[in-house]
Amino acid sequence: MKLVVYQTNPHAAMLPGVLTDRGVVGVAAVVRAFAGHTAQETMQAIIDNFDQLRPVLEQTAAQSEAMPLESIHLRSPLPRPGKILCCIANYWEHDQREPRQLNLFLKNPDAVIGPGDTVELPDYTDPWTFQHEAELAIVFRGPSKGIKQANWRDAVFGYTALIDVSARVQGRSTWRSGSWMGKSFDTFAPLGPCITTADEIPDPNNLHVQFWNNGQLRHDYNTDDMEHRVPELVEFASTIMTLKSGDVLACGTNHEGLGPLQDGELAEIEIEHIGRMAVHVHDPLKRTWERGIYMGADSTNPAVRAARRAAQGA
Image 1 (cartoon, helix red, strand yellow):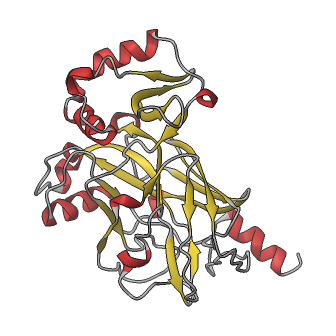
Image 2: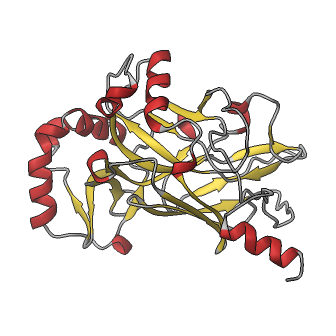
């Protein structure tokens, strides 16, 4: 099942829905007894009570009229998560070495935006670039604490997609050494377009992830390249803190294909079994950077190979 949050117009309330092949079916009436004051609280209540709600949600989605996607505005399915945990790197990228130590940072939950929204680059004059990282994100069911790898599924409700927008100085170095600072500007966490429940993704370490910038394919990788796989991520995070319903853990990215985001561009992420989400980019200072992408020496990314051939004049 694919759960969404939507509005019928920009001034309407944010409502829960189910995304189907026919469009979005509203389920506010079905979950009214569990509704909170905000869309985030309502989605957390759906997660908490999903086993009870699932039969009626499935029936409603199958039998009720659906709204075409072009007639509504999808929002982030988690408008304000309690926590956004993010892996640092976490992909092999063809590097023959010992595994790096697993490490996480916290990204500002207020940075979340949804489909069709705009990434606003900050109007500071420091010599930064602003880059995209396309990532699979785990949506937790809680409270989950001390979960072992053997039982990792107990803590996972589903999955979504996250673009980890990052302010960087000198190539891939994140701004001012504290990773969370350069990644926590307002609007730097596009999240969506839906939450796909865990039963529809039996193996989160076998998903195709792609990212386009103004139609140029950049990220193009499979999550089987994770250095530390999803069961280990769940165990590690839940050892440190209690994971609550609606908390998010972004699994890191394969940096091959990394490039800048700049004014007027359209950024699109798509993850297998989750779907596609597009956001706009606005820069009040109208800065520009070279439209190149990061090319790992042994990259198998088709976008990287095409860029290398173009650079060599092939």
